Length: 412
Length: 217
Image 1 (cartoon, rainbow over the protein chains, first blue to last red):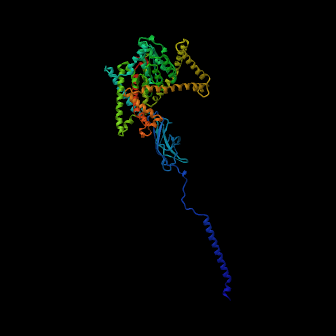
Image 2 (image 1 turned 180 degrees about the vertical axis):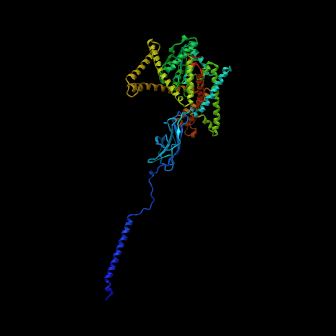
Image 3 (image 1 turned 45 degrees about the vertical axis):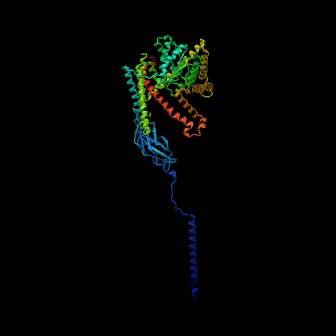
C-alpha cells in the first residue's frame, strides 16, 4: 500500500485547517489595523477655560472711622487683588459687603472700579460695630476677602485738619488785641497815609462847591458780604460830611436789606452831625436785584443827574467798569474801594482814587481815628509780616526740595 | 438797648460760627446752614420792602410830574408787564417753562437787554485801556509793556509775529509767563491783605469795638 495514498485525507484536513487558521489570523490583523487607524489616541495635556478661574482675593482689608467728620461714615481700605492690573488682569470691579457680625449675612452696600483701594461707607449708624468684606469681581466669577476688624463711626469734637487755621487765627488775634491794648494805653501808632481816604473830604467839598449831588453805590451784594458791611461803614462817614456841608446825597442800592441798613446808617450820621432835618428816606432807594439792570439804572442816573462825586464802595462784579467809565465820562471825581481782586484793575484805570483790598477794610478805623480801631490795623500788619516771613522761609526750603512747611499751610 | 441787642447778637453768632468751623460734632456742624437759612428767609421778606419802595418812588415821581418822571412810568409799566403774565398767565409753578408768556418775555426782552449791557464792556475796556496805558512814569511804562505783550500774545497775529523764535520766547509764551508769575504773585499778595483785613474787621465787630454798621460812632 502507498503511504502517500494512505495519508492523503489527513493531509488535506491538516492543510485545510492550516489554511483556515491563516485566513483567520490574517483577517484579525487586518481588522485590528483598520480599527487602530479610525480611532487615533490623543496624547496632549487637558486644560480648563479662562473664565472658570476665580480672581485672587483682595487682602489686608482695614476699616476705620472717617476722621474729622460728623459721624455716620467709615472708610475701608484694602490691597487690591493680584489679578487687578497684573496676573490674569481680569478684575473689573470691587463690591463692598457689610455686616454687623463677623459671621453673619453680608449685604452689598456699594462698589468701585478696578484699581480702587478705598471706599467710604456714609450710611452707618454711630457707635455700631460693622465688619466689611471686599469682593473682587470678574466678568463671570468673584472671590471674597477675609472680614476686616470691627469699626465704629463716631463724631469728632475737633477737626485736626484745621489746626493750622486755628494757630493762624490765634496768632493774628493776639497781635490785634496786643496793639489795641497799646493804643488804649495812649501809645501813638503810625498808620501810613491812604490817598483815597484823604480825598473823601475833597470829593464831598467839590460836590458842595458845584452844587451837585454825591452818589454812593454800596456794591451789588447783600448784607452777608463783608465788603458790603465795610462799604456801609464808609457811607456813614460820607453821610456825616454831606450832612455838615448840606450836600445832596443819593444812595441807589441793589438789595432791600442793604437799603434798610443804609437808611439807618445815614439817618444816624445826619443826627450825629446835628442835621436830622436834612435826612429823607428817599435819599436811599432800591432799584433791582439784577446785576445789569442795576448797572443800567445807575448809569442812567449818572448821565441825567451828573453828580460831582461818585463813591463806588463795596462788592462789585462785571458791572464795575460800566459804572466807573460812565462816571468818568461825566467828569465826576470817583473814589472806589473793593476787595474783588478781578475788578481792582478796572477801578484803578477808571477812577481817581482806589482803595485796594485791605485799605478798604481799614477805612472805617482810619477815618474814625479811634485808637482801638487803629490798634487793630497794626495787629493785622503784624499778621502780614508773619505771612511774609513764612513765604520767604518756604521759598528757600522749597528750592531745597523740602516741602513740609508749605504742606502745613494747606487748608482742608 | 437799641445798640446793645444788635451787638450781643453779633457777638454770639460770630463766636458760634468761628467755633463751628473747628468742631464737626453736632450741633456745631448745623449752625452755618441754620444761620444761612435764616438770613435767606429774612432777605426774601425784605425784598417786599424793596419792591414797595421802588413802586412808591416811581409812582410819586409820575404823580407829581417830577424831573425825569417818564422813567418812573417806564419802571412801573415794566414791573407790571412782567409780574402780571408771570403770576397770572404762565401756568403757576411751571412759569419758567418754554412757551409761557413769562418765558417769552425773559428770552426775547430780558436776555437781549442784559447782553447789550454786557457788550458795553467791550467798548469801556477799550476806552479805559486807552487812558490807562500811557508812559507817564516808570510804573506806567512797565504796565504798558506788560499789557502790550499780554494783548499780542493772546491774538493770532502774535503767533505770526514770533513763530520763528524759540518756543519759550514767542509772544504767547511771554504772555503766559506774565500772567502765571508776576500777575499771580501780585494778586495773591492782595488776597493775603484782604483776608487779614476781613479777619481784623470781623474781630472788631464781634468784640463790639466797631459799631459803625449799626449807626454808632
